[in-house]
Length: 232
Image (cartoon, rainbow, N blue to C red; front, side):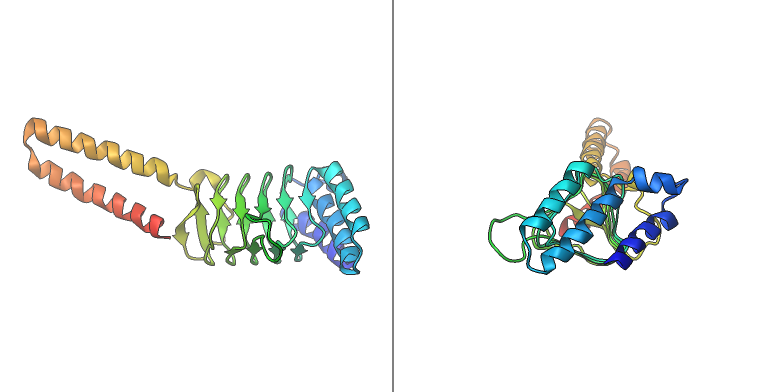
C-alpha cells in the first residue's frame, strides 16, 4: 500500500507542469490526498472492516471535497487533477495511469446489488464535469470530453463527447485531451440545417441549380459525418 502511495506522489511530480516545489505537492493537491485516504480505507475494507474505512473516507471527503468509496478498485498512478467534486462509486474499477479532472462522476444508474458503476481501462482521460454512468466500460487510452454524459461503452483509442456522449474520433492519440479542439456535434448539425435552408432559398430566388448541386455535395459530406457519430 505504501509503495503505491509513494508512486502516486511521484506520478504527480513527474507529470504536472504546474508543480514547482515539494511544499506545493503536500498542500495544493487535494486529488493526491484523496487518493491517500482512499488507499488506507481500501486496505482496511479488504480486511472486512466497514465502519472505519467509511469513516476515513468521510474525513478525506471533508478535507478534499472528493468522494471515493473505499470498495472501489483503483490502480496505480491514477491522478485526480484539481479534483473538487469528483465522485467514484462503490463498484467502480479504474485501471492504471488514468487522469480524472474536477467534477467527474463515476456513478450508477440503479439501486441493485452487484456491478453498477463504470470500468475505466488503462490510460483513459476523463474531462472536467463528465458523468460516466452505469456498468459500462471506457476502453484503453480513450478520452471523454468535458461535461459529456456517457451511458454506453466507449471502444479503446476513441474520443467521446456530448449528451449523451458519442464517439467522434477513433484511433490512438498520444496528445492530451484538448477540450478547445473537440467539436460540438450538435452545433455542427444546426449549422448544416441553416446552410441547407440558405442554399434552398437562394435556388428558389435565382433558379441557379448548378450552385445548389455544388453546395449540396459539400453539405452532404458534413451530414454523413454527423450520421457516423450518431451510429457510434
